[in-house]
Image 1 (cartoon, rainbow, N blue to C red):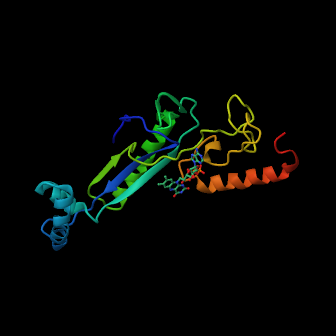
Image 2: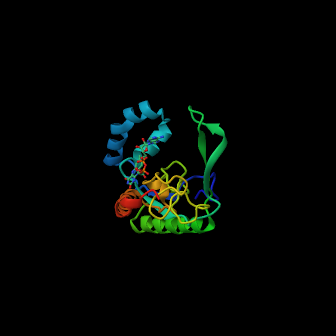
Image 3: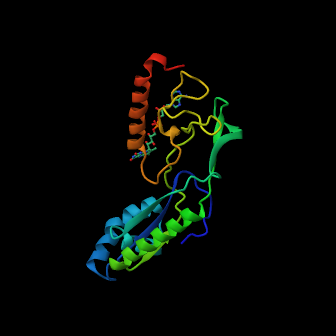
Length: 208
Ligand SMILES: Cc1cc2nc3c(=O)[nH]c(=O)nc-3n(C[C@H](O)[C@H](O)[C@H](O)COP(=O)(O)OP(=O)(O)OC[C@H]3O[C@@H](n4cnc5c(N)ncnc54)[C@H](O)[C@@H]3O)c2cc1C
């Protein structure tokens, strides 16, 4: 396993992978077929050496992956701020993401990787490997305009209106105060419906 984390990642979750490759028997027709079917493709695309190709052919189509997604606690030390130096092409400050995997998240990942390994063993896998955290994965962008009653600690109030600009409503994933390890879109939609209802109820004095 790749512990301790090799590098910081970003976002509200972290992942790990457990893979297994039950190999076809050496000299079997199955292995031979796999070898020739993928030889040209693999050698052209990947420029593999012969030894690498044999390893590839043994695994191709005969492996599976278990992904581990965990939910970070809302750690105060994980932040998104404005980068003091980096800007986009319009000169607007770029976001600066500060993130480290907490002890709690690390323990959850270790637990998930161990259970994944057990599942592979139970399935009869011959070659099991694991890796975590997976740096090259996706991260959901949430929480940059948090919802809350305290203007010092949040951007919008409890029904989506900006604390500072009374006719500005923010209705998207940025109002989240925490983020789950799983996909956020249904929750974003639910929050949008909730804020729309709140606005409708306040139409007479929406900007007061
Ligand atoms: C590859 C990929 C796969 C994903 N798969 C899933 C999935 O399977 N399930 C799931 O739940 N979530 C998934 N997500 C996450 C999900 O798409 C996002 O969390 C969600 O779309 C965020 O919604 P949002 O309204 O907060 O922001 P966005 O959908 O990003 O909307 C922001 C909008 O603001 C506009 N905008 C930006 N700047 C300005 C500006 N200055 N002026 C005017 N408009 C501006 C943008 O053009 C955009 O239309 C995926 C994300 C990616 C990238």
